[in-house]
Image (cartoon, rainbow, N blue to C red; front, side, top):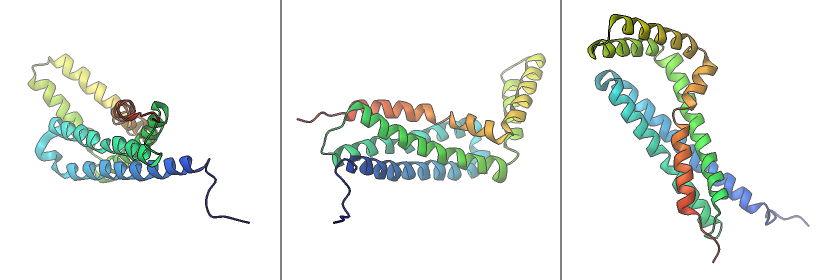
Length: 185
């Protein structure tokens, strides 16, 4: 006799998979959408404000980690260990980070391929405005040129880009797992 119902030992895993995918995809789409929405404004708001808006958008997209852990806890009968909560949260974070990286790769290499040169010009002007010496400006220019050579390599670019949102997601995951952990009564 066959049954469509999964064995009870698989239900928590299936629930976790569904929760992680649902909240990870929503978080990733939010992250990507906010990045794409800010891009046209970058020329008007500048790199400093763009960074503030960008990191705010990352934090907002990682709020889905909290809600994902909470949703999984409620579906699991109202109880969750720190380890299980952390696992759910970090998986949501990883999915969101992958969306972030893919979106940035498309922006950097296809939509705005001159971004590194724009940022270098901005950084040099900022150094000049802060009163840096010509030697310091020349050193900064060399540093930025070396970084651009590395950043133009897709794998380095992806790894470096992944490091932007991941620590925030890790922190949100750790805090959310601690706040939402709950033992069976």
